[in-house]
Image (cartoon, rainbow, N blue to C red; front, side, top):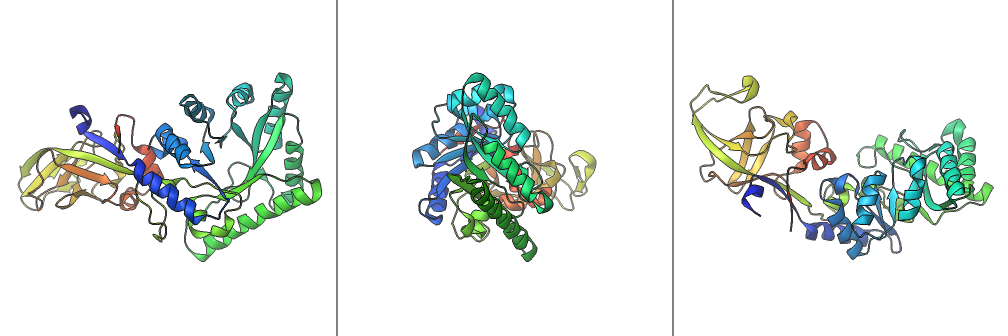
Length: 375
């Protein structure tokens, strides 16, 4: 690492991500495919580096959010099948075909648009049907009175020319949440998904090579839902195993340094808004990380960071490029000392709770100006 990178950086442990892949792989049924979710730059870990690792490890599939993310991977040498989870405008059908991507189809109208382009160009693409079983976001509506029409629309989509229906999937809303109510809701989603698959086979003779629904929460809490493929996202990066059963390791350490240390008397206000006032003689460290790096301002005054000599409480409002920490009881911490904002020693869950958000958002919020250092 050069001096310019020493300000604030993110250490990415490819070895930990490999460990997590192997731990998850060994926990799922033999023969079950592994899809690694690498959307949003692999949750901030670097999509191309993580995808290359997964390809070396023997993963079966990758998933991204949009066409641009998929193109980046293919142009970077990734040969694994890539599923695009979001919408791709039909005018880019030729790109889907040229690169061999798999496109999610969420309703009959979109299926018809893709098919029309396929016929016009004389091309084909693989598709995965998405079923909305309770996430209320994307997917064919099949619940309640819409079951018969929803199944019929899926069948019609699968029979359109130019569309090779390889897979079908759904997404769980609360599989990562504890409590009986959440368990019942997840099981209801799974049951509806199974009913849709059975109806397509029984009434229309349509089956799929890949049925998948197990996101990170389901991999941990509902192993019977693995089916033909699992889709770990957050789990792959070392978070989401609340039981500790898989012994996962964090893939990222968000690091900064102490740039300045100042001494203040009792009654001194610190940072914007004067929300924090010292109640004793205080030794305050200025850390070289702020919300423009991905440290959430909402966590101001409600979190602590890891130093080699103990936790350093964050004080005052977190600024754009820096923040302050109370080092009064940590005299061993000097200018230049490294501080872990989250990672191996500082729980990302605690920082997320302090900011009123979730670990997903913190990982994705580590900005582009923060260099990734691969270990």
